[in-house]
Image 1 (cartoon, helix red, strand yellow):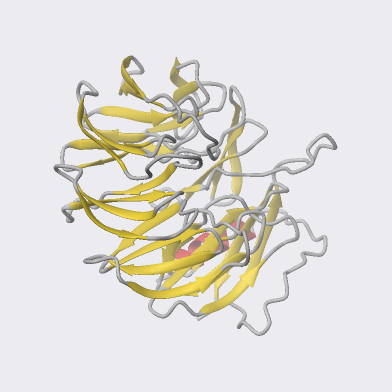
Image 2 (cartoon, rainbow, N blue to C red):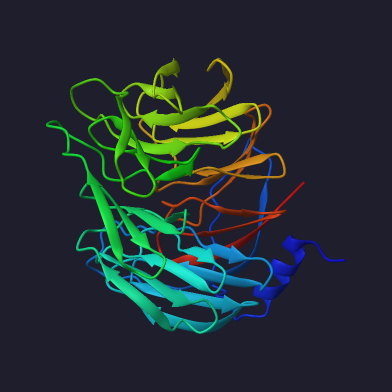
Length: 370
């Protein structure tokens, strides 16, 4: 029986590919970790875009073999086994991956709309105009959707599209970093991070703060741009751009441990490890006490996008740079891939495969070499 990766790669091999030369960044002395199975040009470049970037990770539904892709041109596309099934034009660029739940695809746009569309046809079921730039993938919990905006507000919307409540924090007085943490639902609460350095635990039904914890202190660049809250863990993990990775007690918000990582902007929990990225570094930490297990330099002043895991490999892009494959146990870099324009989005990691969109709007299907 074919593996998921084989089916995915086969599906995309049906589609016309662009045969222009694909430049792969020199990986020596690294091993070669990827091979290109296919490439589709989705977004046409425009002269007015000096630094184009794609931030919305593709979404793959394995039972139906459908791929959903939102891009900076405001188009949401559905590919069925590699063929374009439908596309819709949304209100503003799509900055984050959609969310799939049964027959509904929930899409947040920079134009301020949260939409529910039929996953098979693309027909709109409802649209809620929240009048704020929506920057994160919606979170579904307790029969409600939760989405963060660049205005530092979390909005709850019913599954039928009715706005229910909003929780907002005033931005800090100093400089901040563009980007927001996706709200995380766990332990019967909703955890949200803000640019003033706060992590807040909210009730799901009313949006009342159960606790608020400042993890960044005062000054500039206090942003909390990533959160992880595993259900099987008593802690919540926050990436503070100023102080690093902070573990908080999920019930009280009390600090448990802190690992100093300047510019921390990504955090991922897997098994006994916490993976985090910050200014020029990718680290693995002990989930118990925050002890460093390994560190991989990313280059001076370089930052990473959201990491993903596939069969012992940590897949992570350096913003506007290469896609890296890193051994999750050891931190050894296995290989790199860069089509020339770099990446600014997290990778869709599958078994033995990965999908990612370059900043020039090219959708790559990559195989992972053993």
